[in-house]
Length: 257
Image 1 (tube, rainbow, N blue to C red):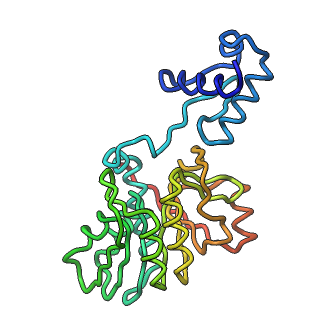
Image 2 (image 1 turned 90 degrees about the vertical axis):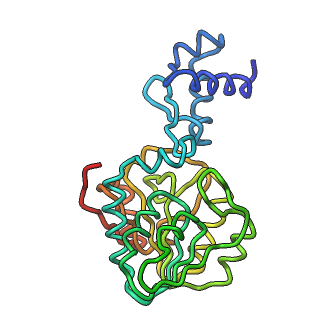
Image 3 (image 1 turned 120 degrees about the vertical axis):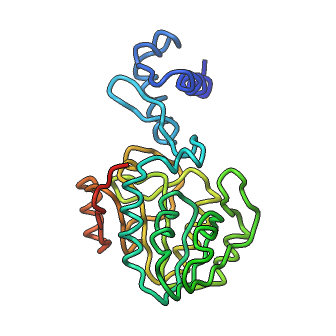
């Protein structure tokens, strides 16, 4: 059995059970423990599982949850982060928000602001803000992904590139301690990058659980962000990197779900 076949089998096992062990896989495949560890390391680096002492566990990704279920995760923390991020955005300014349940909470907290221009590729955000005070709402053009109301792809990127807004607010699926901000879907990443490029001030809203998730596609580095709004103190390496890049880390007060 070659490496590709072994790795496929490992992922199949993790679809049926939460974790696998090196010893178990060594017996199953008839190879050395070093070979199994190399397979697990490769799969970990690709964001397909998470290595642990003696084996690996299934990655608990946001991409494999229904969007409605994701709204229920860390609801209190997301609301607190949304309020804190919204406090950075004054009345009579312009802002672009991307797809995500955290950015939806920012939009909810912006509902009392006046004179905003809000651009989004998230139909849910536009719907949240319809009828709220003095807002110009701009829905990004393109094909709608029915699972979550996202508008992604090259049409969305081109549409966003026509604008230059005061604030970008993005979410992400994963954060690495080295300062990398990551996601699973390359199409979503292209949109997030366009949002960051076309804004004067850039805000990431991401709860601390995202440090426990591995995702393969890079959105940006801390150097490309002005603020990171989260719900708990990040790892020391992340804080050191933020200090180097002069990115401000803001920690929202914890709120019960």
